[in-house]
Image 1 (cartoon, rainbow, N blue to C red):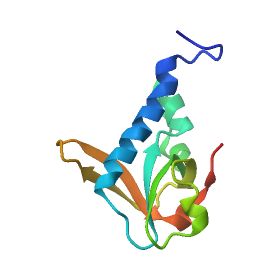
Image 2 (image 1 turned 45 degrees about the vertical axis):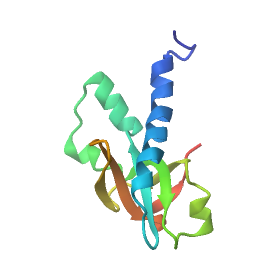
Image 3 (image 1 turned 90 degrees about the vertical axis):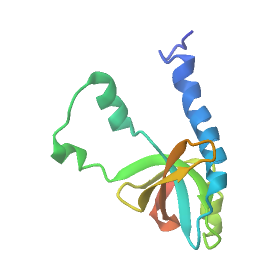
Image 4 (image 1 turned 30 degrees about the vertical axis):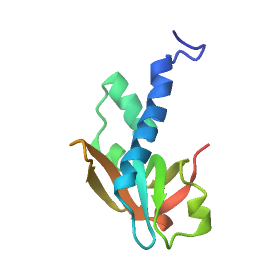
Length: 125
């Protein structure tokens, strides 16, 4: 089944399932101080390149300094405005923080970005 936009239901539903899984996985990790836990999303540029198979030159790839993702958790010292973005899609500094892997009790692993709330550029609507 597809919509008028040409996207099928699986393409639209998959991100919401991934975010629900990320919130469940985040129960096994609590950031400290001003740290935030972000579930990185594939950027629009990466989605286009992946579908068409076009490989961009390194200089073009480096021109994009932001990344998209969902804010999953905030540490206790985060500002109130950052806490209001939990569960929302955000734009944040691409090369900020550290990529971390959280091991889960069932043996799976979930990958997140651990950064500071100051690395958030804003909410994507």
